[in-house]
Length: 216
Image 1 (cartoon, one colour):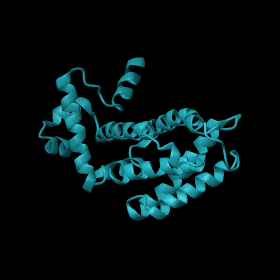
Image 2 (cartoon, rainbow, N blue to C red):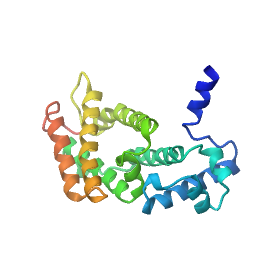
Image 3 (cartoon, helix red, strand yellow):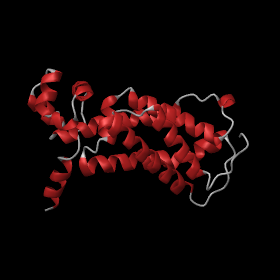
């Protein structure tokens, strides 16, 4: 019974490449999936389409991705890593007067990243991928939330909070909900919905944060 559970679990996740050659093939398949998703919805992109686009055999695709959902999950991981790297981008502290400015900057960068990667919008706001995709998105959110207070506190002297992680978690949920509406209506995150997301998140965080905090 345990072995059957492990097999079912493994079938829901991409197989990690074991060699440089395998890694190159793996990335090539992800690139092909990415190109297909620019014009097609995830439910239109299967393993055979990925194989044809990559110039690979279907068996090669199946080796890494047992189902199309697993291929989409692997691409979703790549995009979430790209979003995570946004926090490492340089911040001109002299241009920031408050935590609100930093929150707006972070959301502008995230919006620009999403809009420049249409497949990311489809995978993360289109409701595709099922349970495993939701779990992956939740883990990503938890990782980002766990570091957000420290990042903000490194730029501004943030107040001591009993549960800052909960505040940022709810803030993330608010932003996702606003941007999901924009994606469903327009296929992108528009400037209007960017501003709506900023306003909603800042209004919520003002329940817990002072209007002004001194620079660190």
